[in-house]
Image (tube, helix red, strand yellow):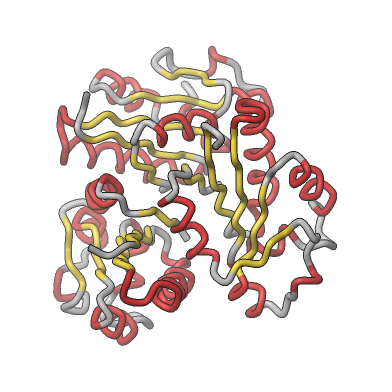
Length: 112
Length: 112
Length: 112
């Protein structure tokens, strides 16, 4: 297990840049010793769209071990489907459910 | 004790709808196995006003076991009293104090 | 060790007043029994500038035992240096790194 575990909660479209920089700085500081996951819900899911400005960065960070999850409720409400996101992004039944599970596992929570 | 414990921090008036959906999805996902509490402070307290759009929903969720708390400091600063909220809403001395206590008890924290 | 530990994450310039009131209420409620730290990153660092409206209050709270930290990445990106903040403010390599460490130590997380 990684010594550091952290969940970044991305819930506003305007917080995409900050969330990406947060993840970058966490990798820079903790290297291989951090398990990082970005959970997007609400309008935050828009940040991870394949057509969005972060498609390439999401793929690169996923290769570096970062997990990305989008909330199925939030996608449905906005007409997005699985195909609207890079393959490395996981669709979870509920963003808040995912957050609760991770915090119970000991993940630190950060809300940009 | 419930296996899942979660606190939703409602601190902006514009986050009422998201907070209500979060709670709804938590109940949907974890059912009877979740203890959920909404703590409102700052302008977030306005969401829970008896005259607000969520009066009925707050009562229904409270019957389903969800707790609602508003910060006394925030109420005083806005001229609200106990009577301005549905009976199921508890007025706590300090919203941040309530949050700190719940997190220490193991509640996951979610900030819509 | 203090029985209560809490980290206030200040990441928006407009949240300065709320963050200061949060800290004030935590001291009022828990007195000497709380270890409180404000970690500022993003535009939140502007709140703690020596020329800002909270210079005096930051110094007073620091004397009361509150810690203040600003993110070096966020300062560099905005052209701020160590001298732009009151002496009681610590510059940490990364705001998110500081947050992850504190939560792992058991600090409750509050995001105004």
